[in-house]
Image (cartoon, rainbow, N blue to C red; front, top):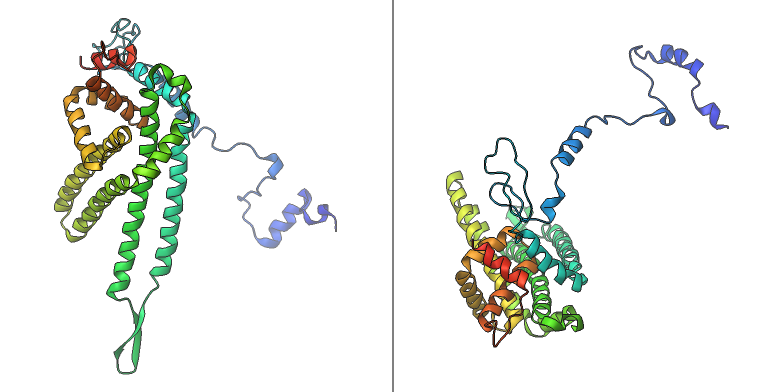
Length: 345
């Protein structure tokens, strides 16, 4: 049978309406070949608004507290009395630090792949967690609960096994995130302290990977266990508190403690990659460096939260401690030194 016989012809539509009692106000949908773009006005204003408010200079320059760009003569913005500053003599902002970062990444482009690999592994872990939990949630023992009455009941061992499975999954997620951080830190640190020999640096990422696997997995396991323990304590406290205000207090306290430990553990991993010391010794040294350079920490955090930036800053602090710029030359570039010095102002 031909295709044309199965498609309703235009002259057949009125007869079809009579047979099916279709309301005359209802229209027959148009054929696909006659369709147009629908609701195109719905998103166009948002696209235009977003593009108008976009400024590529934000990718290159830093800004002050009033939105003035560093390194250029800013235009006056109506309604903002603090705008229009001339910062042509103050070029050291976001661009300077982002350029110390860009050089490291361009020298080691595989650094950009590490987060992708880590994310892939974490997706596998989450998939295994869902699979095992779906299986384990059906676990039960057939028990007698009355005369000639039996039912499947989950015992304490099964409940513990499910909780343990979740905790191990959280630990694994934190562990592989720590591995990524330490491998990146070791690579960037090797590049930083290579100085003039950076062009001849041989496989820093592979070297850092080998060092991490061979020497520092225990440090990562310990640091990730502390973060997992905090997450478990937080979950336990939230389950015990029913009052919304008390739960808010628990969340506030636990979130701050968790954020602090994450910040400290990241910097401890960097110090471990640099000096090969244990988690606590590396954490202590990192804390001392961060406290000594507290003003710089605030400035660096305003640049962004990248592995690379944090590692460069710790390397800068170590460089300042280990060298004096005269008998022992600094490894830092003049631009990085000026950026950190100007950030204090």
